[in-house]
Image (cartoon, rainbow, N blue to C red; front, side):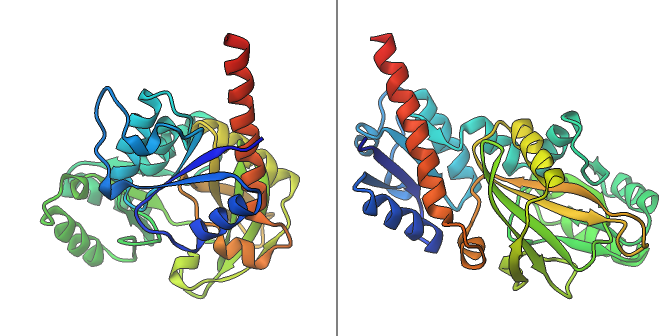
Length: 299
């Protein structure tokens, strides 16, 4: 079945090129939708979206992603990922609350709204602990706080930055991971492939230069990935996991520290034998096919 796949973007990166190449190889119709050039009316969709069977959100800017997916759903266009999933994953507070509610092990976290209250949280967690922006990616604006003087300085800087989001202090326990974490890319909770990201730095994001290698997806990981995916609403997701207790010599456990909704997969595709974009397109075809069958039944 030939499908018209819309790609909602603001910049075509390597990840998007991998998807586009796979879609072209299968002779699907492609509609590239540059979100920067669109006007979203509350009643009528932009012309670029009229004939789209399924829309894939690949926006770089979180704000654009959140609004554009809401409009797409209002127009009745299936969108990956949906607006609800995007809203939960884009906000670390909502992300943590969803994981906690679903019983997924996740780092202990406090949220405070003043510098004094945040400092109390930091002191309660002890040093080191981590201060993160509520909205952000690629490991930016994250701070490992190792002393009270550092805490006071960082909190003062955030308090004077101006934007209200900097006055929401997201304080998290520091997980003493063994120089690595893991990312699993999954579709509706079903893992496609996983990788280990290793670095001497406490941040092990691939965007920060971490070394990557393929990771075996264990039964424990699969269970956590499925539950975490369900917790945020499902879709095409990147689930980030850390091992705990390794440095102390105790049996290691896994904790999920984040679920990502506009997941990048180029680094994973380079280290795994799995054809990641092909698996993603398989899933998109299945989603579009299911919608088509449902529409036929209704008519």
